[in-house]
Length: 68
Image (tube, rainbow, N blue to C red; front, side, top):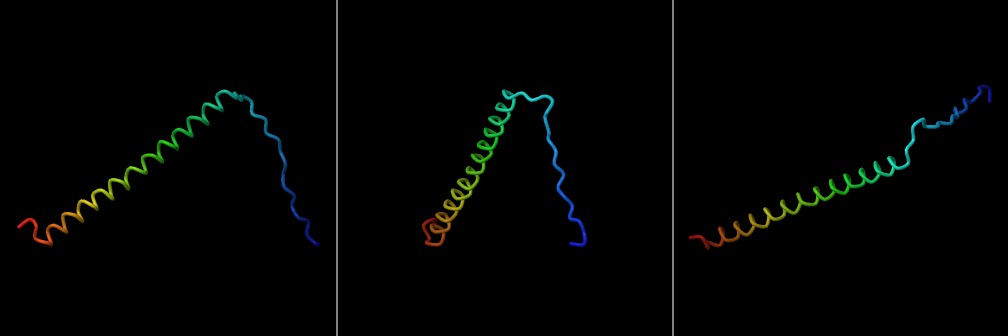
């Protein structure tokens, strides 16, 4: 109580050049980029698991002597 607590500074920001149509376009574009990047991430694990399964089948046949 001896020291005064600082108060938050309040301000109002009014953008000078606001175009609502452009704003919706940028939001839609960002959403498409996000969904596109998420789809790319899903492909990598599928390729990884496919290679892993092929390698496991190869090792199974190699160890059982099917290639001899």
